[in-house]
Length: 125
Image 1 (tube, rainbow, N blue to C red):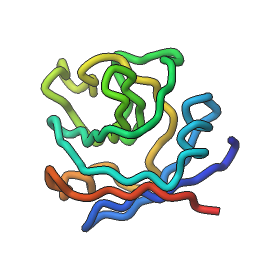
Image 2: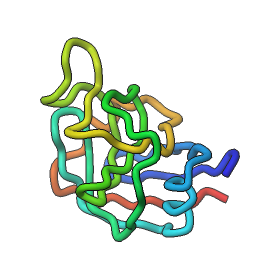
Image 3: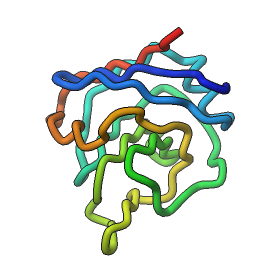
Image 4: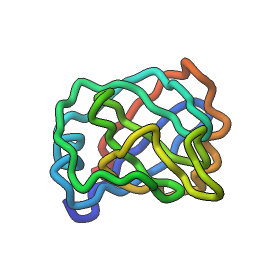
């Protein structure tokens, strides 16, 4: 999976991200393109996807710009700041997620995306 890039578009934002070496990243790559409708929870965007993956080293705290897969909601998550579960300056998902990638631009740009915005995830070859 080394150097596999995706493009995330949620008007008015379009940003590249790089996938990591997890099985989840490969499953997501193989499922592209993915379309969804943004839901926001603090500074997190998430949306359900038709992908069933198992937890891989699930993380209770993530980093700014991480992409995560949330098993209970079969959801693709974009982390760009604190969530209602955060303590102090940490970024804490609702429950642990598998981190499968990282945004390559300024994550805070996703603050411009509103609930219900259509999201498209595509391969960058």
